Image 1 (cartoon, rainbow, N blue to C red):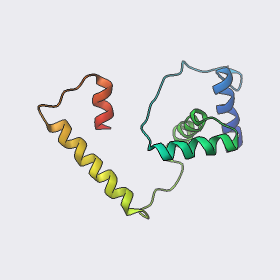
Image 2 (image 1 turned 90 degrees about the vertical axis):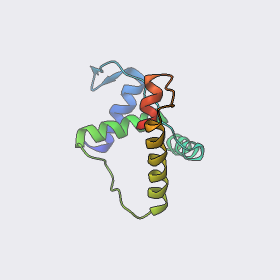
Image 3 (image 1 turned 180 degrees about the vertical axis):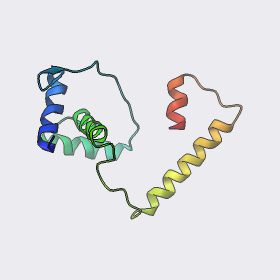
Length: 114
């Protein structure tokens, strides 16, 4: 499936719930955390190209599943991001290992460790 066709299918599924006139399986809610500025820039970009942010993430997820890979190259050209991610992971490890940590829900636990 070509990128344009995939994009059309995602747009169609978001508005009608069907792809290629085939009813989709029930959708589920998926939430992620983004820096506020990144979210704003993403919303602006998506609006500029005529899709919703939800459709953009659906497009990404469909592409990953279809290709069984991340659809772009991940490189080590920005070490500051690696340092930030490493620091966040260390903080999460501390919280998970702390016996005094209180988890209010399964969702909170999984969001913390993922």
